[in-house]
Image 1: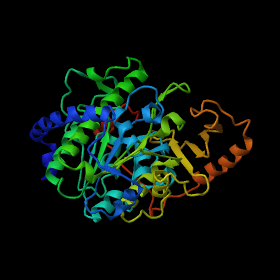
Image 2 (image 1 turned 135 degrees about the vertical axis):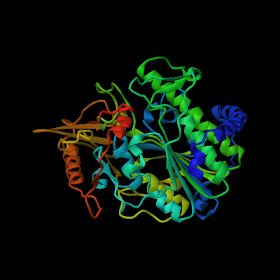
Image 3 (image 1 turned 60 degrees about the horizontal axis):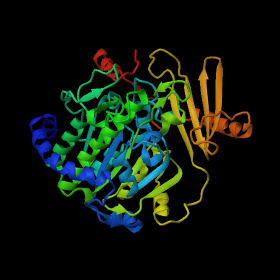
Image 4 (image 1 turned 60 degrees about the vertical axis):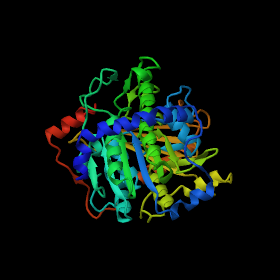
Length: 470
């Protein structure tokens, strides 16, 4: 019943009328940093979230959103007023590492809390096994209504990402108005993230008085989609990307306005992150799903609580996308995921909120992984791996008969532009051993990862996103 309603168009027209009134006022309020409708909160309130029985969870994944193009992460352009506002009244993780620069590999790690080598999902035909214990299953067992609305075919249900969701759908795409521009010429898909928000509002109309978990996978930034109102940064490649980020902020604000209008903003934990970033010629190439350098793996992670922290806090330690779900489940007081590589960052959050020193421990190690032959059916694996520890990023790129090594020092320059491997040979040797150990790791599954037989129609849908698949 609910799935059919989410696909219908008539409820969206009614919902749109409600949004318009709330959207105008709320966007001005949030855009200029004025107090929002949430009451002030403290570290003690964060700690008590796990005791609440009325708390919902909204998880927004903004595909292809790099942290280096967001204002609260130091970008000079005002691309992200809504995200910046949420960060200024919530928690911003300053150094968040995605586990791949390709969506499917990255999302498999995000959902399972396992690094790519341990998920086994590193090629286009790989499927997450049923024995993986997914967060939606844990939330469903706890009584949450679980719905996922996605627009990227790499997280389609047949790849194994639908586990635990009552509803897992791609919203019906509506024709875009003339004011909207999509600047990626390879794309043939219709619709926009506004369709996802409309479907989300319809879900909330039906289930808003129950306890719910809603996952939205946005794609407008990936598609470089913007409109005449957000065409403010120019017409270059990076300019259009920034335009699309600004428009995405407005789209998110539509949903926030609705949550406020129906009294759910103070009952919802909001998490916002990304699967990977985007390169703009920093090292001679553009886009993603090709390398594991900073620009394509450094992503945002922002938490917004049902109350406002004044001021917001920043977790400065290295964190990773494999930490996202351990952290969210811990905040909600739900059972932890077992045998994973990630860990809850709640102790770090509480320390930052209380102005205390973070818990002591060894430097957090992060891994990012991309099989350079991920889209080639009959070629051997050719991994490129980044090991990130204590400000250093070691990158090992394999190719037939040779291996390339690079080392970057973020403490010298956060953009990591210069290879310092000759000057830091000891560091490189230590991180090389970690990379080798990582590549020797095995998945915890009892059987090998299944290889999906993708038909030509499904391949065409993925090609429509701009990916090169056989």
